[in-house]
Length: 278
Image (cartoon, rainbow, N blue to C red; front, side):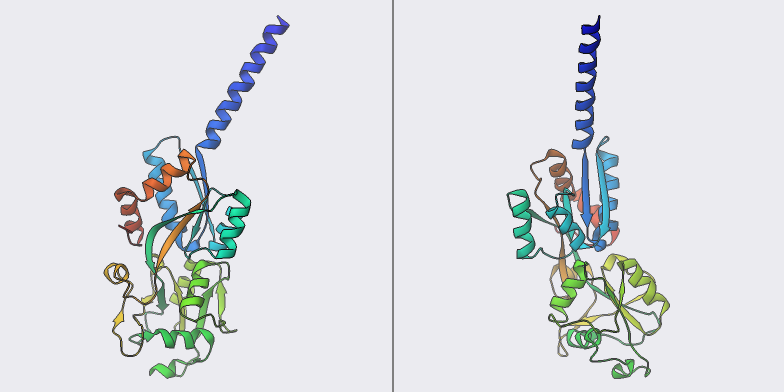
């Protein structure tokens, strides 16, 4: 009898272990870009509704947070609104023993937010650089009121912060007076309430603010971050949004990423307010 009880206990433990392993395998963790978090949460909801039993856990914190989690092997997928750096790629390879796979999952245009009452018609990349580095400090320079320009940025763990610094500020430092915000929604909220402010972020967040058209230079036409302009790369601050993983050979990770890149998944991307890569 004792032997039978012990045998049944072993069988129960093995069955429990298998069941637990199944739950673990069905769970995919995704961390990173704040720009992407609303999009990937929506993708996860649609995916889990379509494929019962699958669990996709999504959190933000910034591209740097997601990439660090991938390096530390605490996430399956890292969302990033910028490409990973060589140093990050090397750290990931050291941790995992292989290079990460890169997937372009959406298109975005870094959008310049100003208050709805702002009458300025457009800004050039050079003017944006001067504003965000502190060279230009008053709206008087653009024919408006002689009021200080209140600058909002993202925190330095943000991929958007890094992309904007590299491509607009040309790697110069942000002005010391810039107010760092914990997320894109916070930037939008602050700009919507402060008449003389300016900020930036993903196009899908642009609610309750004026979107400022941007010129590549003084002799170029001004463009808005609209689908056609971004797909043709004529909007001056166009970019891809990325997913990185070292576990594409895992069937659950592969299934989710592959679905994101289908017409159905890209339709969700468009509904959120970003643009399809197809």
